[in-house]
Amino acid sequence: MDKNNLRKEYSNGEITVVWQSAKCIHSGICFSNLPKVFQPKERPWIKMNDATSAEILETVAKCPSGALSIKKT
Image 1 (cartoon, rainbow, N blue to C red):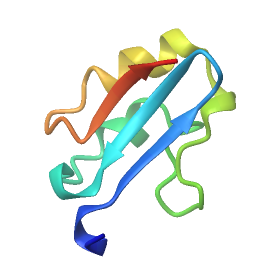
Image 2: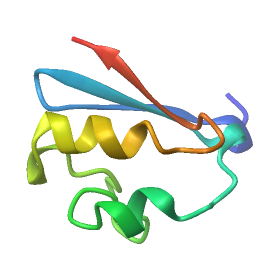
Image 3: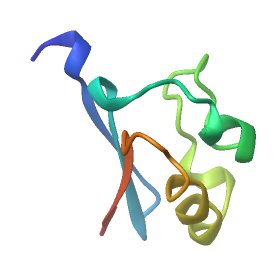
Image 4: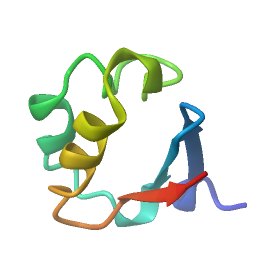
């Protein structure tokens, strides 16, 4: 897989956040709205257990590029 087109999934058992690197425009909305979950300098960078599913859903819905999306589990 092309490292510039990574696709990663992060789950908390209720929902799964899908991140697609090729779509990401680095707007910063995710980590400015929910910094306890979205931590781009950490690995893994999405900490699914640090907020409720509702909080995560709300933040992912604000992603302007569609790089973050939800896959129901």
